[in-house]
Image 1 (cartoon, rainbow, N blue to C red):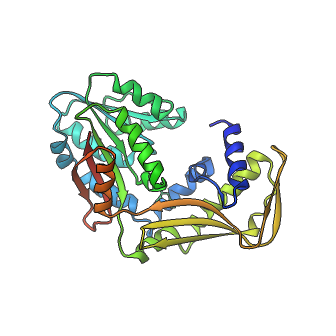
Image 2 (cartoon, rainbow, N blue to C red):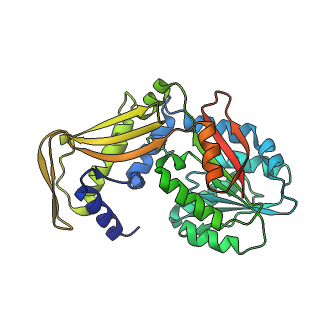
Image 3 (cartoon, rainbow, N blue to C red):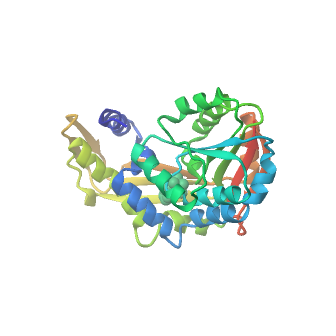
Amino acid sequence: MSDNTFAKDIHKGLSAPLKHISSKYFYDDIGSVIFQDIMKMPEYYPTACEFEILSLQGNQILDRLNFDQPFNIVEFGAGDGIKTRQLLKTLVENGVQFSYVPIDISAKAIEELEANMLNHLPDLQIKPMIGNYFSMIEELASSETPSLFLFLGGNIGNYEKDEVNDLLTSFKQSMKPGDKLLTGFDLQKNPATIRNAYDDPQGITKAFNMNLLTRINRELGGNIKTNQFDFYSHYNPINGEVRSYLVSLAAQKIHLQRIDKCYDFAQNELIRTELSKKYTLKEIEETAENNGFKVIEHFLDCKHYFTDSLWVK
Ligand code: AVJ
């Protein structure tokens, strides 16, 4: 991501009537470390739930893939790969013929992932690809090999409804008939459980959001006083949306020297930062259907907090 895209997006977001900063900007080097800390919090259940699904139900997932020839497992945004490794381990141990194709825009992330995977699974066929998801999946669509696409971790929850439809449309365009898609969805559950996961008492999630401001200061020469902002997060159990915000604690003006722009904040003015949508199984099925997929099976953890949902084109 060039500096320039970041500058343009921040300028656009801070100039809008309802200010916003995309949650994709959480994940700089510092933010990625804070996210690791979030995943270690007792309140943050999604990681353990998906780990359980992929550790215990690999054979069931394999049964439903129904590929009669060697296939690719293509993963978008693999992260540290620990959860995916549990699924791959089951397949390798069963002598299944497949290649693992992780895709990431960061060459460093891909190199680390490859070394790590091979350290644990020396027999794994791994063919990493560095680059933009969509140019990569077009390349894969032109090959004869069937594919299972992985979009794990509940990342889909960060997309607004029309963005979800756009994303699934591009996935679908790049898939061949019979190709499968395994997507992680966080499910609706006791609202207090969700609230505690996204507004933790230690303030780790707050630090995750505040890091956006430090990042702007560092990369765009901003003069933002971070103690003039607070974090507010809200779960609405009616529509399943966790929405997170930064709140300006005073009327203030900030200046971004690198792009020579000023932005005014009223007291209590919000910056929208993140949507983390929680789904019902029915909504997942409607989402699949509306985008031309068929649900094969939902693989749930024992608490029914999370699902990896397997679809076919
Ligand atoms: C990485 C998008 C799955 O929405 O649960 C964690 C990010 N935000 N705590 C999520 C996140 C606040 C996370 N995802």
